[in-house]
Length: 200
Image 1: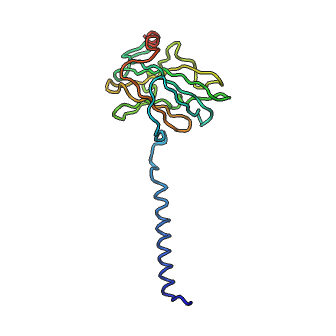
Image 2 (image 1 turned 120 degrees about the horizontal axis):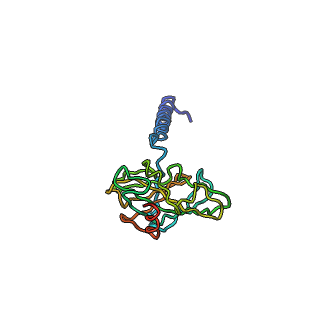
Image 3 (image 1 turned 60 degrees about the vertical axis):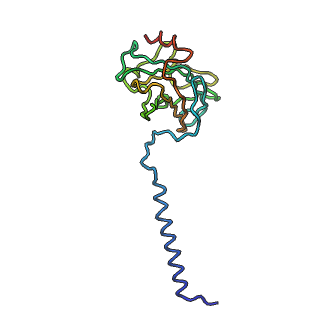
C-alpha cells in the first residue's frame, strides 16, 4: 500500500509539534518552586502533638534517630540573663533520646527548633541576644550530640509578643521533615516550678 507523501508530511509535522510542546513544558515544570527558601521544612501531614508526646526524628545529615519530647513551656517577662526585645520569652524544655547504636546529633544548632504563631509568623530558637543566652542550670546537658543509649535534657527559648503565646513548636530534623507540637498559651508542664526557679 502506498501512502501519499502529503499524508506523511502532515503526520511528521504533527509529531514534531507535539515533541516541541513536551520539550518546552518540561523545563517549566522542573523550575516550578525553584524560588522556595531552602530552609523551609517539608510540608507535613502529621498531626500536631502535645507536650510530653514524642517524635522519632532523623539526626543531622539524616544519620541515626533521636526521640524528641518537649515537656514544659514557661512564659517569662524577664530572666536572670536579661529582658526580651519583644514582650516575653517562651522557654521550652525537651529531652533528646538516642535510639541508635552510634552518637547522633540533633539539629538544634542549625535552626531545628522554631516557634510558629497563629498568624503564621515564625522565629528560630534564640532569636534575640538574651534568648540565645538562656541556659538554666539543670536544664542544659550540653551540646547537640547524644551518645548511644542515653538522653539529654535541654531548653530552647523564643523572644515573642503576647499575641504569639500558644503557638506551634516546630522541629525540623536532619531529613528536612517537620514535627509539630501545639503549645499551651499559659505556662504548662511538669517542670514549670523548677524551671522558673532556675531562671529568676
